[in-house]
Structures are given as C-alpha cells and as structure tokens.
Length: 130
Image (cartoon, rainbow, N blue to C red):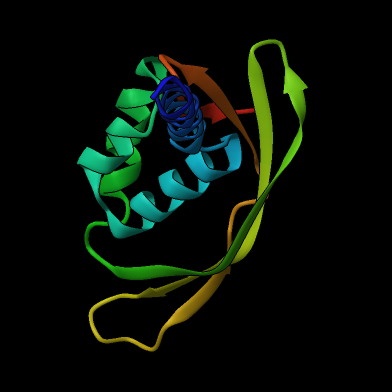
C-alpha cells in the first residue's frame, strides 16, 4: 500500500511539473502570435499579447489591417539576443494583402527587431529595438 501511495505521489508531482512547463511558451511564440493577430486586425488579441506599455500601440497596429484581407505566409521568428530584461526576436515571412478585390500584394515582414518580455509567467510583445 505504501509503495502504491509513493508511486502515485511521484507521478502527481511529475505531471504537475510538466504541466507548469508546457504553458510557458517562448519569446518567439509571443512575437509570432502578435504578428498574426496584427495581420488579422484582431485588436483584442493584440492587446492581450502586448505588455502594458505597448497596449496603445497594439490598438493602432490592429486598425492598420482592419480594412484589408491579409495573412502571413512562412512566418519564422528566432531569438536574436537580449537587452536587459527583454529578449530580442527577429522574424521572416511574407505578408499577403488583398484590398477590396484587387490582386494580392506580397510584402516582407518588416525587418525589425522585436522586444519580448516575460511578465506574470507569460511572454508579451513589448515594442521594437531602435
């Protein structure tokens, strides 16, 4: 009986530890989520994926895509170092934009270095590097 209880206890601790690690995500995931929400014009998702200091900019970013159909093709982000508490992230991909039935236009994801920060256990987009 004790052996079974010990096994169950170890199993539960392992499961809880793995569950805690699984939800953390990464800096690159946060930036990819932010960019996808931006292109979708999803203001609520943009604000929720931004740090508090960047929320006003997130609302503006959403508005810039709300009148077009757009998507990101082959989005790939990678960590590019750090700056204090921020993790720097660069991304590549193609934004495909179609405005009012016109032929789609392709545009590269902006050549920017994004700043991500972990706040309250979640990675958030928090601006770009100058």
